[in-house]
Length: 100
Length: 168
Length: 346
Image 1 (spheres, rainbow over the protein chains, first blue to last red):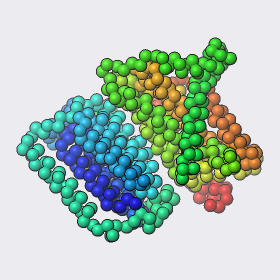
Image 2 (cartoon, one colour; image 1 turned 180 degrees about the horizontal axis):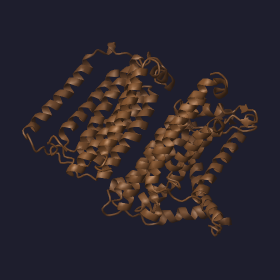
Image 3 (cartoon, one colour; image 1 turned 45 degrees about the vertical axis):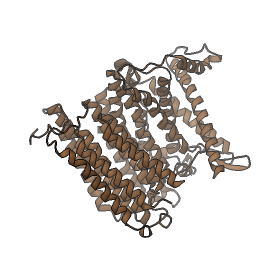
Image 4 (tube, rainbow over the protein chains, first blue to last red; image 1 turned 90 degrees about the vertical axis):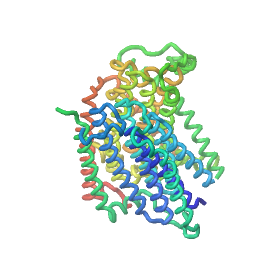
């Protein structure tokens, strides 16, 4: 039988990879991808704990996280498109003025 | 058997996640993330959360990632330059901090004694079915559900306003 | 356990063989239907009435030169046909083709597996199917392919929504995501009509049908491969067996969609005498699916193609609101007259 700690360990590993990605990537879309990876790592924790304890709350929370992720992707990608339109670049180091 | 399956899917998930870091082209990064998502969906099935597993594929792989791929193809972006132009010194600090984060996460997981961990056998068998999730979602969790729908409406309007060209 | 595994493997193998043959002959049927509608002869040279034409086509595909464009993204270019065809095949394992048939002294159900979330599984697999098209368009490094891929991704996201929401009406009536249970609930009669969901959900069915046309990239929604504008759309650069794989995956999608439509709205394998003679159920299922496929072909050779802006406006401003209204309407009716719509109490 798989111990719960395996799931939690995998989740921690994925979260760390995502966090590293957010720090080392310079392309706005790549950073966004790494944020999605971190969200998924947390989802794995929630589902694992929810299943092992037999409490549905965690899975419902994951459901809501998914809808929020969808909303976030829509708005985030819209922002990325408008940044690309005004600057012709997605490098986050070049986006340092407070206006578009 | 189950442990072997877990290891297979975990290796797929971690390898695809690492591939996101390695790839310079965001499109390959997005495809690797889809690999991670699919592996996680398989793990959800192993955790008897079938509904969440299906939603993972429908919502994440089928909708959100298609949107990502669409935007990447639409913008046809140049490759990522991972060189940080400002604050070059910081990069040498990054690796120890990453190791520290990872060590911290594993320390917490392994510190909890195994006896305290609940077993999957004892857990409620039909916890992850669509029926039980639906029951709970539309009774106890009705308010969060409704609030989420308002959030999605706001996101739709916001996305349209942001992506609109001037003068449209 | 091993017994079950062997049964699964035999069923999957058999299904795979039947599907491949069907797909080969669908291309022949499509050309014959086209020529019949357009008052010409069609393929009639190879074999009796041209019945060996699919074999000739297959041989031709195998012996054509396999071209990889010089500046294509090589690995994705090779992987894209596989990514297109694998999801197209995966959804067949949950579709119920008939009741249990006794073979070798044991009753064996005519589906590979039965899962609680079969319908969600089909939707999930269908939503992944777009990647093959999109990646083929991107990796070919050709502007027509790229345009085809972009159109495909936008079109599939848009019409998936109305497809999913139109199915909710059926779910409200049958109260299950299990395809076997959905079929079983359509066995009874309402007066002289069979209690098929089409009679309870006419608007839902029309929305489902239109969205299904769009999801399978069939005329009038074949913009991803519009030959008048984009050469051949996303598979412009493909040749040989890779092209054949895209071709086959489109026909697999066609069979999937028509099987799902039959299962959800036309009672699946139910029909007179199907309960006593289980083989009849299979026959009914195949007849219903082929009627649907004929209608799809009929539409293909009758209607012109949409323009891109018309497609988007139709999907978002007409189809989606109507689908949502249909859900609200159905839910209200189920709440008001539960015994009419739900049938026997659950």
